[in-house]
Image (cartoon, rainbow, N blue to C red; front, top):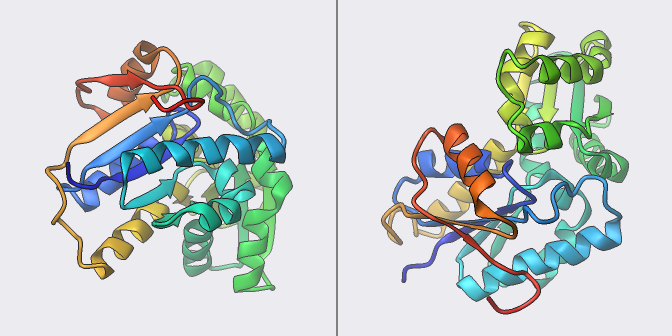
Length: 269
């Protein structure tokens, strides 16, 4: 079997990165792992997150992938340095690519970051942005309910529950004067229509999963592997009951998913 690109997240959110990778490199094989048994990651301790991240990565070692995209803002914020030390292939998270893009497009130097509790508390996005330009004003807001509402299918543009939560979390961002907002968790782009509607025009949104996918694509091009490996097959694994994931994933990806396999991260399955 030709080597694939591995993509993982705690649940559904990382599919935003899969969607972008498939658009950029339609012939590349992708293996997706959603740790649905332990979603959400955003409220966990750093110690627990590092343990989960190592197990996620070890799953891809068994799949013999050629690159790994950590499509999880929380893991990218808290555990990426640890994963880079143990990973023998190229690995990229979502924090650095998103920060670079936000720095490129901001006009007034005010950049907001919305992410999980763990990502915000880590300060990872703020550090990346300040390293690029210490003059940036960074406004950070934890939005812990965004992941559960996405995982439970509450992401329709007219969904009253989602609209109420978006308003509650983002009123502070809207009033801050930020002209650029980083969607610092890969679940959040699924709520993009609602977020755009509330924030209004003139505010640029940076999709962290999309920017990370572009980075992985660039690496593969530079390694002269583009379009040489596979047939564009996507394989999906989850750590809990597949049916709920399948239904929501098909709704988001707008295509039929042939099979989602259940896997345990605690053994060699």
